Image (cartoon, rainbow, N blue to C red; front, side, top):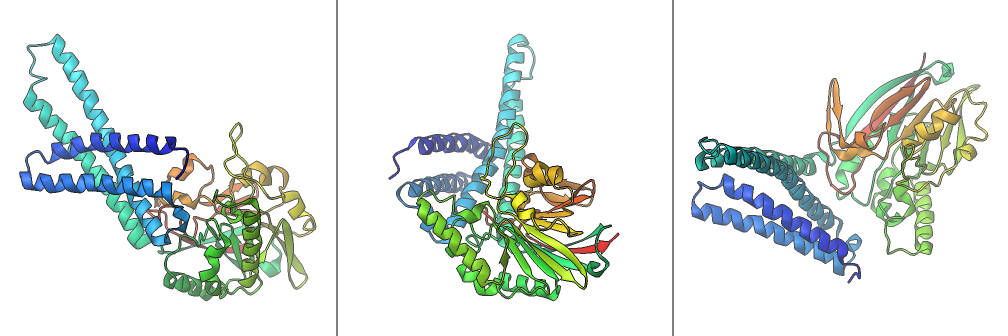
Length: 422
């Protein structure tokens, strides 16, 4: 059992407060229902709390990384959705309490007023609670829908980028980008097989993979090696590491085990026919023309005054060496903070940077003319194409998922980019 119980005690108290508070809303909404119905709802409500505590304390006596993937993913995701929904409900409860407090204070100075009568007070309370319960229910069922139908609902996003310095022989070059596969989270193989088939039907010239092949351990990708090895590209498949590929997030691993996992993962890239760019570059030639493909290990650059959230391993200056004469330079760099932090500051002749990492938060809204995601409060560039001067950044929304085994509004992505001469 873990020695430090403080985080568990704090979380336990948080859960109890949220549950007790949200239970008041459930009681209010069901006030006029039959006693037998209310009893069933009460049992269901507190049974969910009991299951939550069972899941929480199970992590104290066993390593959740060793649990079956499906059990771990769906159990914790469901608990997360329940309490996220309850937090939305609590917002309305707090609003209701503030209104009731204001009305009580007002009634003390105006005793002749009927504003504070019991009947009106209860009616207003029920109205706000019903809105809160409705929004909480929508949040929960949207999350369930995202797990059931969107986790493997791959969306092909097509984009054309015009480059004035693109050699004529590379006009129409088709690049497929994948990112953030997170194979340790994948629980099905058939959708992955179909996704690979869809990619191959595109007949890409190049395939780029921009990091996070696994969650924690090199072994996670082994059930999918044969599938991803079938990806076909006329002029090569290139890859790089993301922050999860270094085995840094499993605290139970010794340093030697983390290093061994990294080396094993390098071998897996090779087994799949992926050319892993380890702070290095490759020159691709067509006739007498050429372009450079540069790949760096993970580089994270926090916003000015901010604290680094992820470790930096890469060295762009090293990776860049030898590509100076190429008229077009394409960079694979997992974390999009690298673009503003270094690429468009010091390497202004890198034409396009391909990144991932954000997953688009796996939740948000994307409709014509409007985009929103929690990711935008963390990352300046969080999904899609960005441009500064003559340089471009493309942030892939991710092929897989991490933590929450689904997608709400931000679908898993296969990017198809065509380069054209301006």
